[in-house]
Each structure stands twice: as structure tokens, then as C-alpha cells.
Amino acid sequence: MSESVPNQDKVTGAFLPGNKLAEGKRSRHQAAYLRGLILDEMTEDDIKAIIRTTIDAAKNGDKDARRDLWDRIGGKPAQAVEVSGSDSGPLEFVWSVSKKEEAPSG
Image (cartoon, one colour):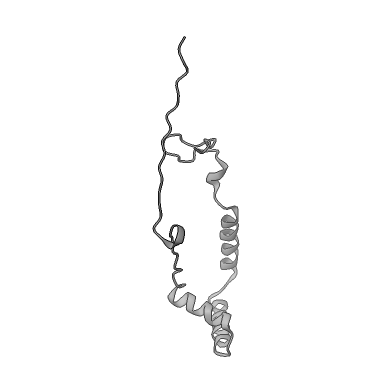
């Protein structure tokens, strides 16, 4: 059985305040901050120019530009994920419960 994580509710398993695992990825916060800085500086004309440049690049054979445009227009295609057990068969779950032995009285 796994060890108890400090600052984690023993019943629900939820992270409690002060648990470093509950902070999430720091890079996500940094990316949001940088995205905000970029958006504050961009004008509508800047955005239109970038879109026009990307469209022109796609029309001239730039595969990355073409992929980026389609990803923005229709969304990225869903990734297929297959989950299977050994020999591509069904998953097999084994549950085990251990009983804590009591100390002998005496």
C-alpha cells in the first residue's frame, strides 16, 4: 500500500493547504502571465497581419503554417489511445485487502 502524503486528507485523499503537490505546474502560471503581456501589446491590426502571413505561408507550401491554421479552425484531432492488458486482451484487475494483525495481549 502507498505511503501517506503529508498535507493530504486521509479519508478523501484531497490535498490540504500547504501541500506542494497541489500547486500545479508553475509553467502554466508563467505561460498565462506571458500570454497576458503579449495580448496587452497586440493590436487588432497586428493580429490580422499575423493571420495573413500565416495564410500566405500555408498557401506557399509551409506545412507547419497549414497545420496551425487547421488546428485553429477545426481544433486538433483527437488522439486515439488504446488501453489493454497483456497480449492486447482486456485489462485484469486484482484487488487485495490485508488485515492488520493485532498485538498479542498479555
